[in-house]
Amino acid sequence: MTIKATELLKLFTKAKQLDLSVEVREDKDGDYQIRIYEMFRPEGFDEKVLITQKGETNWEKVCYSFDTMMDLLDDKLEEQKQKELKAQKRQELIARL
Image (cartoon, rainbow, N blue to C red; front, side):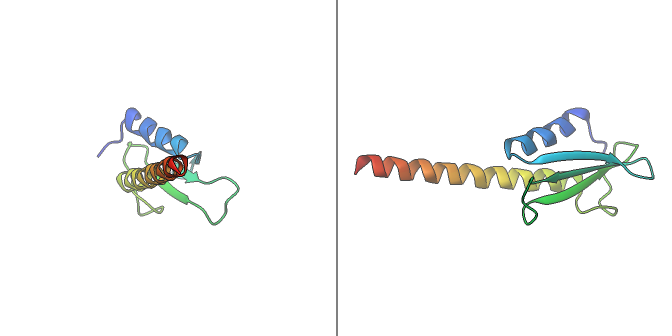
């Protein structure tokens, strides 16, 4: 599977929505390591994905494949949405009292 530029932009957008930092580095083989992490929270989210020169993912060199990273971020976005919904319902309940 070749990763398209738009898919990569989606990854970056999801990270931004979660207030995660993104760092891209070229390794000794010329492949690109993408690190997505929570700034100032060493115990927080800190994962990597690798994209080869051919535009493919290689999970053997780092933690996750591109698709798995997208799924992880989707899960975190859903958790965030649920927390926001819960907080909104709590505020509505307090307002009714």
